[in-house]
Length: 183
Image (cartoon, rainbow, N blue to C red):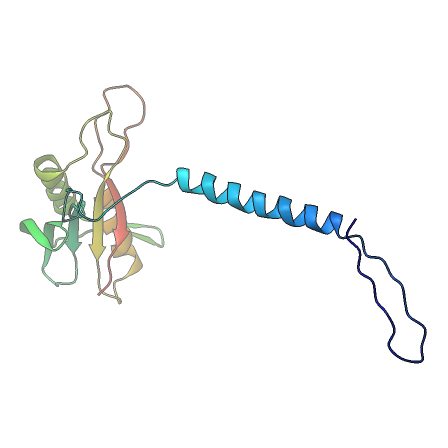
């Protein structure tokens, strides 16, 4: 059995203490064997890879969704522009003629020519026309900061007036998801 003995070399009495080294040696052997097994098992789970493997060098370019931008900042015309990212697909201008109706104290503004032009543009250039396609095209409204509220509601009504034909008798969803653009 492994023991450690101490002897006194002075006037004091020697201290005999026995330390059992067997459990410490057993712990050390088990720890070393655990570390060796862990190293062997972790190296088998690795996948060798190298940068010399052939593959695509460039990432695919991000596909930008097509959107219809209605610019209402001019005084006499609306500018309708289909864009894919920064690329202009098609642009057209529509005369700005508002139809005002007074209902008591409430003033309603509508733009029938704009509604008609947006519907024609969607039929010609819209992407999500299939009844099985659950997505809508994007309509971005660019307006002046001082646009009256009634005119803004008229623009929103013109954008949401275009409906998709889903081929069933229920309510028809809008063709556009309407949002605002800022400069």
